[in-house]
Image 1 (cartoon, rainbow, N blue to C red):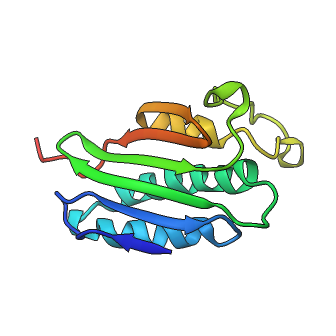
Image 2 (image 1 turned 60 degrees about the vertical axis):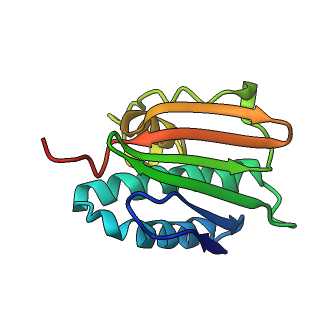
Amino acid sequence: MRLSAARSALCPFEITVHSGPQAAREALTLLLDALSCLSLGAEEVCVVRLVVAEMLNNIVEHAYPDPHPPGPIHIACHHAPDGLHLAVSDEGLPMPDLQVPLGLPQEIDRPVCDLPEGGFGWFLIRDLAKDLTYRRLAQENRIDLRLPVGLPPR
């Protein structure tokens, strides 16, 4: 794993980890450390953590379903007046139908044991992120999004 470029609110940086059971944890630790200069509030940190963890877990589980050999996961990040811009890419399997899942709200008025195993992540990502796009470029998946965090005071 590596973190490149300066840790500044104005300097873009990139993180690279390899898929596997610790990929999300490693990337989140590096990302949140790099974002510390923004002095995000607790709720904003939770938004970043939730969205990025969901995306990384989806990559590990679905883009790289066979953990051997592990594949690269890249996160490029920069902060702008409208929030935190992230580009997350991998070289794993493409998204079904070459598009981001709809992420529809799940019915939760039932016993916990009857709730579906998945389906909540993309709903949360779509709800919390802005300007979400997915592209398959050659052998690479790329998701771009903006999180409205670290905004200037009004």
